[in-house]
Amino acid sequence: MMQETQAVSADRAGMSDPDQARARDMFPRGLSQPRQGFRFSLDALLLAAFAGQWEVRGRVLDLGTGCGVVGLAVALGHPDSVVVGLDASPVMLNHARENARRLGLEKRFAVLQGDVANPGGLRPGSMDLVVCNPPYRDPRTGRACPDAVKNAARFETGAGLADFIRATAFFLGNKKPYAFIHLAERADDLLVLLRESRLRPKVLCFVHPRAEDAARMVLVRGVKNGGSGLRVAPGLVLHEGQGEASRLTAGILDFCPHLACNAVQT
Image (cartoon, rainbow, N blue to C red; front, side, top):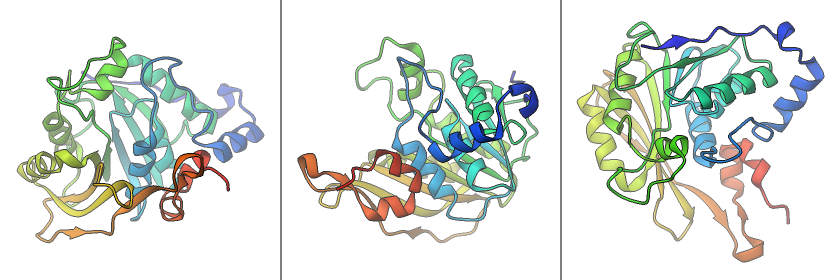
């Protein structure tokens, strides 16, 4: 059963407006994360940017929120949204709560502790948008990490892809959109499971490490009980140049300005 954490008011948090403005300008730098173990990567920022390509307003659910980076990015970019970050790890939710405080978003970002494999605590069909960056790896493949939090974020241990998709369908309102990011090599699994849960995929966008490389990730936007018709958007390319001259492409920085925190200036 999920327990909702009460939001802390900005006055009680003790953070001044200049501090909040500085934290927002630096975002995602300066986010509270575990010193060891799982730390967010650029896929989280890509998901938030992808979801934000369309109008975002109302109630947003960030499934598997971790330190809150996806949901907080959505809240920062879309002032008419109210975000709930759901995660099974109290450790990660403590970081998400602290990040909302630093950014002055306590009134528009709350956290829930709970298991997506047994969803509850929120009304069915109550969300206007669901965003999800689930664990990518089958636990039967790859090497497990000794850090339990990092292992749960990378591998489908407690909950699998099907569980995240069923939870999305459970919480999402009829005809409302969702956005996922996953490994391109598992796009077939993702699309089959989405359709089985009546989450009709509408837009696919593949993400390539370099222009000459095969896609590594896929972004999917769809609609619950949506009609037929699927569009494959132009692919995104992350990097150009080699060695010390390697840098993020202008196209990916235009798509996701938050990635500028990792851009190499030339």
